[in-house]
Amino acid sequence: MRNKSGLIACVWAILLGLTPLHAAETKPPVFNEVGVVERIGATLDLSVELVNESGTRVPLKSFFSDPNVPVIIAPMYYSCPMLCQLIADGLVAGISESKLELGRDFKVLSVSIDPEDTPKSASQFRDKYTGKLGEAHIKAEWHFLTGDSKSMHTLTDQLGFYYKPDDQGEIAHQAAIMVVTPQGKIVRYLYGIDYKPRTLSFALKEAKVGKGQATIDQLILYCYKYDPTSRSYTLQAKNIMRLGGILTVLFIAFVIFGLKVKKK
Image (cartoon, rainbow, N blue to C red; front, side):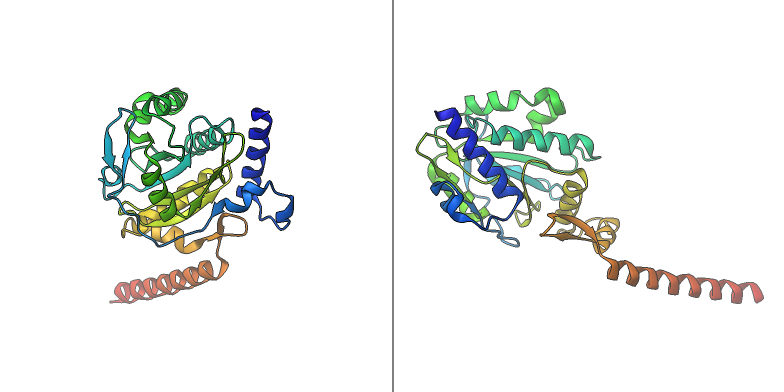
């Protein structure tokens, strides 16, 4: 019975992450208290302490030590019957299909929302993925964290991520991850279990640009904008036309200048 209820909860969690729901009465009652309130622009309290796979309490700021590397936060729990594994699988697929390199371009924090999770269960969950992205990278740059209820709720409240245990001992929650700048500022929420390489790449570029990084990244983001309806980055025709106009003017000015120099 528990497995059946867990499967039903998983399906609803995926639907919550993929599509807006208009018929709240058809949802299991627990999902009326579950969801995400986006807090884009909010800065996390990096003094919150969690527990790493070795059982050591560490402040969140220890994972934000590199001023050029943004962080993906993925709330989940390690005894989850299906959804959390799908979220992790989706991240692995998106990262593998992109040109992103774990550690160089970003870090990942999987944060348990179950106070009964332990460093051992976190390590066991992590070990499922060490061969998929490389053991060294996973162990160094993808951290699977646990903590007490107070620490978890402090962090998830700041993320706007709300969850609730159901009657069968599972935890109802939405499928969502957050992209955070190296300084702890939330810049983007990505939903569902399928993280497209381009969407991941642009969200991480957006997090870097928040620190004033890479002019080329700023140029790309000028042409693309996140569309909350499609939950992906789409081309902005007006901005492309403006950019084209600017480049045309610069090209003409360059040609005129070159002709004058040649004439002299």
